[in-house]
Length: 448
Image 1 (cartoon, rainbow, N blue to C red):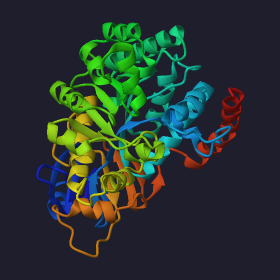
Image 2: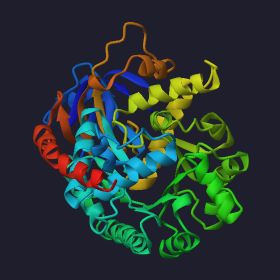
Image 3: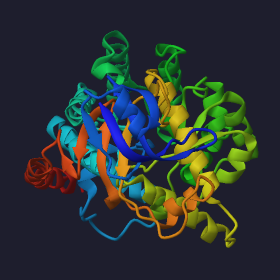
Image 4: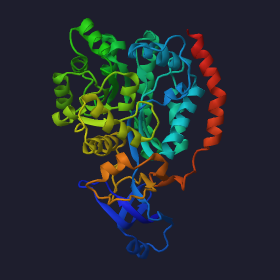
């Protein structure tokens, strides 16, 4: 396929903006880049997709999300509103996840993937929980991923909060799915697997030890860390050490593992994360919604921590997460100089791309360059001031909007063209989800 007449935003290092250029895609990869007239002459018989002067750029990447939270939208929480994050866990998430069936897991993934394709998010790293439907739950998500055409990394959230049998079932679900992905390499590299853990405060010593014993060094862990002070104080009370120190002792940290949030870690914990090469993901919209504070993201980046950007189950419109990061840190620190857009780019573009490239092991992801995966979006943005590689981050923060995404491509396959979804029937999926939601909500309210 030949994509012609685009203005390419390559996100190379350094980034380039190339007007009236074309991309030659062979299979799932970008094979050649050049002026449109040159590649049209070189490949006259190739199928063409005219970008019509739009910006063509790598698809957005979400470093941490929760598909299973989709049915929380509009859900009424019984009684007084939760007063803090532990109450939010108890009254919302730990009751909602118990209400999910395999069918609900499948449709919660589908509605999120419709959102992702529409909004130009082509790669997502998911963290799943469904305590009453554990075995095979990752297959249900993988089925939705296959139908959508996106790229996704999956894991199951192991926790002791639902008893030892379900903790063991979570371990087995992770191991089964990890082995399946290793053995079959399904979806031509669009599916990856990690080992999911909830958070230190719901994981015993025995369970953490069992997880580490069962998982090879070639597999990374995906775990929430210090989202709220309760996680740190629980660890200090029970084990006499902070959360990151505890995970380090158990061998959970490392260059393939993802620590989510890290809002309340201290300086030594940040240094441990840097020393071990552990990934950290930042989710500002979620942090604001849960009123848990803001991580020392800029300091982590300075310390050498690899910080990426996720959405924690919020909409898969990642530019909204950019804007939240850019604005929230300024307010949090009462300083308009904090969190420059260049730091947001480091997280959302370069670090997320490096994480995705490591996860899927199928060539570079998140860059327009020969040999890279053809994960692309067209953006119908018409700047009224000059747009350059130097000021692009601020154009995105103040000008880009998810409604401007007109075409989404993953691994060389067009998933949406001119805002028309080609792989998913959004209307049918929304209809089926609406039929399912009342049953999920009824099970949820029955738990109170």
